[in-house]
Length: 180
Image (tube, rainbow, N blue to C red; front, side):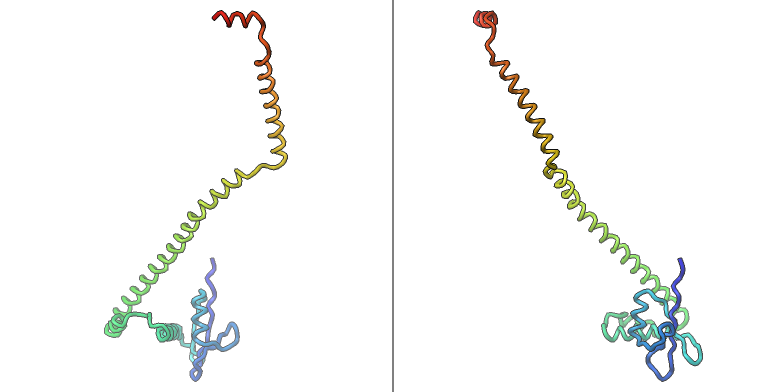
């Protein structure tokens, strides 16, 4: 499976917008965030120096999102991050965030597959009911005619047997029965 190509954006010093080199147009941070959410890998570089600004820009996107919906990282965690701003603290924090996010993704995937299984199980009784109804639907007219003919034949046989039983018995058989 091929890795998706990086979408490269150039950042100019005086402009807050980024230049999308693939689309040949300027975009804002929201557009870059939407691409990232859609699974596109991005790289942001300084237009003059070529310095990689991806990390800084992604943090900026996170900060913009935190302004709009204050459900970001807890304040105490942010304070601890500033306190532990040494290299070891940053590495631990990044490992922790990465592990937590991987766990979140695994849970999300498990939840989605679990929902699919629940839907399949919920649909199963409906499928059984549909099969039952279809197996008990009236038969086609050809089947009905064959069945009617069979019933007529059996009725004729039963009538013939009944006539034979009602026919007068020979005199000897009546006399033998009367003696008993």
